[in-house]
Length: 340
Length: 274
Image (cartoon, rainbow over all chains, first blue to last red; front, side, top):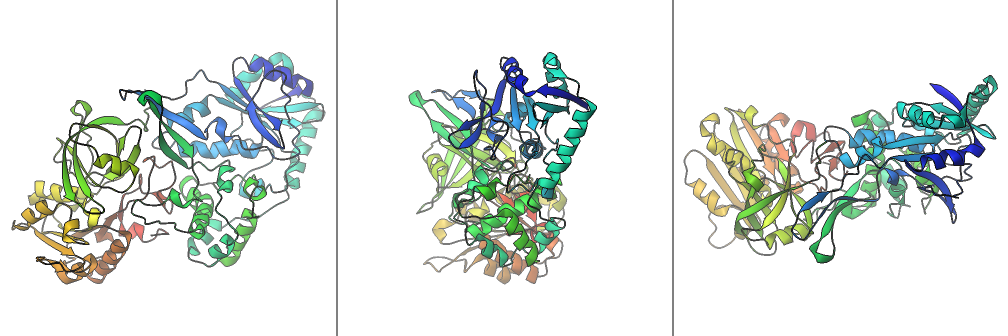
């Protein structure tokens, strides 16, 4: 693995030099939120986050995505993104990068999804190490790490006036080679500082839960009253799913346009809504919020494990921070463990 | 990479009213563009759609032994199925599929077959009926147990009444409540199963219908001595993608669209939510 140094005052030049060939998504301040947007000239990027940025899942898995369009004669026009649309996600945190590694196995599989996979393949992920984890982060409890490399091509660790850049992939190597003049070799001191920060970051994660054996526990307590108890507060708003980097459920809808043209789109959907599973007959296999919240926890901590061997959660904590009624996934998992 | 979301065009060549009333059922006979054959297995499904309206997952109600057309029996309920009910012969619809695992019907050679259906649940069982009839010498005794709320709600009524006249199978029809002129059994399908008492000896039982009916049919089959492995069901859940991505049709960690819709009861009984 290559290690390099990129001076902070060279970051804008780095991004500007790439923005011709790539659409560079970087975090910017918008009202009280930090959001990822395509990079433009003179844009001020916020990399020293004081609070967690909004998810960036939409760069590869858009909230609304056209599958195909059709004209007045019903001629169908495919809308798979082309190879020419190259993207860079700059400043992504390791948990969010890891979420793409999880989504990869879902959208690949025995029937590959070309929309996601093409965009994923043409996107380079440049992370910024989470040297100061946020209040509800619990990445280390679900197999992640604030300085983890899963899903990333490059990882930048903040050393004050410069970044220590770790190169993990061929895509990452190509990228730094294209802008080689901006990078220098790190000193032994830089390497040491990077390692210390990484160790400190791991210790700085504030929330923890021991999830060993959780899938076995879940296998035993499907009908336990704990599900009703932890659902009492839930208002079914679905924000936990819309702000979740690993949620991928979608709906497919047709939209009519002028002159009998139209398009078929897929849009993010949420398992917290009753319409999500409602049968045409009126029967609903998950009729109340109890079954729906239970399914969400089972999906992430049992079903995803059964199918893919890893938790379907990266521990970013957004569902906890952003829940309007303080549903707390870590607290809920503790309650679930206690029910066994 | 092929695009699994792209539908292909198909033409409706014939429509047939199966039932009328509040929830009418129509059967659509369909051929794919350029005469392409879908090569489905009995028990598989397809996304049937209309551009500008949407798609619904519908079980294929015809057998691959009759490859010259596909049939779909569709109850008018939601936006897509209502729009389909307005379609006539000659109109173009879209098809995606086939999806799902289908019935392991080749493994059922030389066995007795009993299908147990309720309401629109007879549609996914119909390919078994056609397949067994088209390969009659490959199977043993054949029983079709089927019921609906009223005589008017029986799907494939003319077809089943015609089959009742044959001596190489038995058709047992029922309705939930007594009606003037009804000759068959009156009562729920699970009760008719108990009355008919199909022998579990070398028999495969396949059931489809409302979820509550499936549960009691399985309960009664177990009571009659059927083992879990001898019982199959085919499930339906709300679906959008058909390829195990969109999330909503899961039963436990399995997706009805991809890992189902056909489940052996030995597998199904261990899944939560069933």
